[in-house]
Length: 339
Ligand code: FA5
Image (cartoon, rainbow, N blue to C red; front, side, top):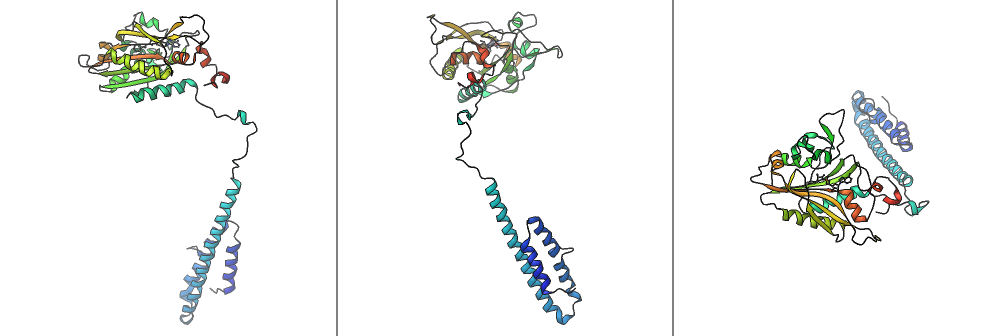
C-alpha cells in the first residue's frame, strides 16, 4: 500500500471539518478502526515493505497516527464545547420573567383533611405513637366479631353498615377499630399506635357524611390506666385544635371497651348568640375490653390498654368553626383556598 503525505493531510482536514460527533466517530473508524481502518491497514502492511524502507515508513506512519489521534481529540473537544454552549442557550430560563397574571399563579396545597392527618401523625408521633394502616374493605369478623360485637348484637346496627353484595362476609369498614386487632396480632406489648383512615356509614346530614375519616389510637402495656388516656388525649387534642377548646368526657357504651367514654367539644361559632353553645361528639374511647386483648393474642392478665377513635371532620369543624361538614367534599376552591 502506498500512502502519500497528501492523503493524510486531506484526512486531517476532514477531521477538522467534521460537523458533529457522529461524523467524527465515522472518520475515526475509517482511519483507526481495528478491522478496516486505513491507517491500521497501512501499519499492518509494513511487513511487506522492503527492509531498507521499513523503518522510515514505520516512523512516518506513526507520526501521522499521532497527528490524527490529536486532531480527533481536538475536534471532539471543540464539538463538545459547541453542544454545551448551545444547550446553555437553548435551556436558558429567564428567572426575571413575570407570569401573565401572577395573582393567580399561587402554589397549590394539600386539602385540609390530609393536611390534618399529617398533623395528627406528627403530634402523636412526638409522643411515641407508631402509625398503622388497615384496609377499607374489611372482613365482618374484624370489623365486628373480634371487637366483641357478636352477630345479632344491636351494636352492629348502631353503625349503619354498607354491606358488599359481591363479597359476602366483607363490609366497608365502619370504623378504624379493626386495625386494633390487626396491630395487636403483629406486635408485642408495650406499644402505642394511631391509625388514620377513611370509614363508611349510611349517614348523611350536616354533621354526618357517608364517607368520613377517623383516627384510631391504641396503647397497651402493663400498667396503662384511664389517667394515661385522658392525659394523652387532652394534650394531643388541644395541640391539634390550636386553642384552648372546652371539652368533656362522659360515659359511653362501645362493646370493645370497658369502661367506655365519649368525648364532646363545645361547638360554638363566632357570632353564635345562643350563649351556652352546643356540644358536638368528637369520638369514643376507653379501656380495651379483655376479650379484645385476647382476640389480638394479648394476655389480659398481664397487659392492659386504652383505645380511642375520633372523627377527623368533626375535629376540623371545631378547629375552623365550620357548621356543615359537606363543604369538605364539594371541591370549592373558594372554601379550600382559605386554609
Ligand atoms: C366509633 O366508631 C368507635 N370505633 C370509636 C372508639 C374507638 C370507641 C376505640 C372506643 C374505643 P362512633 O360511632 O361514636 O365510635 O364514631 C366515632 C366518631 O366518628 C364520632 O364521635 C364522630 O366524631 C365521628 N363520626 C361518626 N359518624 C360520622 C359520620 N357519619 N360523619 C362524620 N363523622 C362521624
